[in-house]
Length: 398
View (spheres, rainbow, N blue to C red):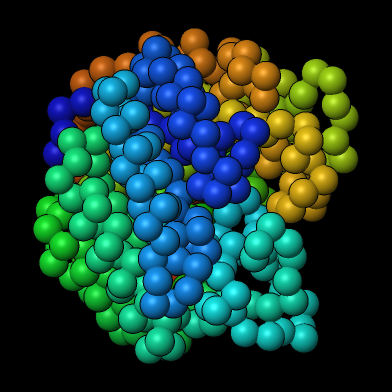
């Protein structure tokens, strides 16, 4: 896949409604936000179809949610923005938002809380790669959403899930590939020829979770990667921008050289009027702007399709006590705009990247000195070693 312009995107949740916006829908808020994004120079918006809002029952896709999605697409077109809808959300901001009908009881602590109906529930997601009922329900949602948007001028592509390995892991590689094939087939049958990807993240490289770049490349049109230095204990610090092209190139190498959209990166910033107790380091706003500038320059230099920042806005203070922010306060402060709508310094960085021509995809993988199967035998060890190789090759003084 080749586009001539380096795509400049944003991951979108509204500041006041966050993950509840499909139920408490305010088109005026979305229009204001999209106008703001257009003015800043963005051209691509990734948004998330909260699974329980779009499919409250396994046999029923909510028509009101589909209508609101169409309205969002109309607003995007009005502001010359394209959309990348993400299905089956799923994992989001340190929690798993899964309909109760797609969960099972769990009496063991889980790494991620499950949220349904805006409350934490003592369940875990069922394995949809191995549950035929869930597979059919997901196929129905993919088909109906694709049918609703397939001819809309604002649609750019499809993402089949946000970091799905944080919800559940396929029992085998083949079961993961079969799931991808089914979802892609439903979208194509509905009439959409738009590019399809899956939102992989750094942990899909740190561990073999049976659905990684190689499996995605077998079925999907392009690869996607998420990377955050603040979450990588093997990065050189929370503003280590070189980590991002490394993750992207390694994903392309494992994924048969397929083109890649760097779908998420960003950094939380320290708010002026609050002092949240965060386990994750919070940057000064100017520091985050410098990190973003360096990251965009590197992602452009190494020939990726584009880059999407996390995320549009900080979340309103009144959401602080609600999940997921009660347990992950730093998640409130990744925004390029503050919760009151004031831009952070990073917005000025974005304006300078609007409409920039794309570089050809980087083709030099000589610094990778092992075979993919050797990497997968001990991925975390190899990641650290290969990152050193990458830095010696391309950033000897960084």
